[in-house]
Length: 293
Ligand code: NAD
Image (cartoon, rainbow, N blue to C red; front, side, top):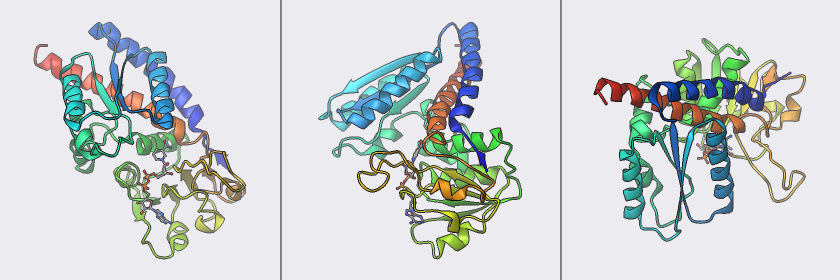
């Protein structure tokens, strides 16, 4: 079985991206900029934000980092986002989720101008994606497509089964596979006989957020499996360890290719966030040039 390593794919793509960043700097006289906003002190979010800031800087990009108080009012957070929407040195704005309970994530995220939304999660960007006019795609499913492309997994004409229908992963994943000419089935918590459906897939994308719930019985011999799930269970045999939605070890000598957890889709998400930011910077610069800016 081919082990599809997102860590490896991300490393290779990083080198290309560094060149794109340098070229942007040479042409525009400034670095592509990513602004990250974190509200409150959630320890997991702080680790994610630190990693994003570190990666942004390592790629030669400009990093703007705002730590806002836990009790901030929604209107004040939106004011900050609007300020960044107007700032010409900022190409991408990311609000780290989850937000404290008194803030409505959908309202806050929608305040980001779609032209500066590297997560691709605003209605504007999701609308373009589903209309077949993609500006940027949400980072995790976009990272899955990059892994499939890197390992030369044929997609066109094949049956892809996506398990999960969230706006962040499942739905855009299905749309990207459709755009790549797969025949796509979406499964969810109300799907009857999940294993029978997933066994009919040439490509199975597991994104249900259920720790190690899929195994050999869900996969046809020779199929390709991508595991998007990330869990760190508190008890059981995998207590304290990272694991996915799939029992990877059962796929050896059965599936033709699969992504592990950790080291699979996870490292691609941050890479695609950086690629989307640079892509938005280039698009923004073109619009600026057309306007004579
Ligand atoms: P979510 O909870 O919003 O959505 C889960 C989806 O799976 C739902 O549509 C639900 O209907 C479906 N589902 C749940 N149980 C099911 C079952 N038993 N059978 C079939 N379908 C079922 O989760 P999400 O935000 O889409 O994330 C999914 C997983 O991916 C989570 O484990 C999350 O941590 C992980 N994730 C990883 C990355 C990454 O960078 N690798 C990024 C985002 C999410």
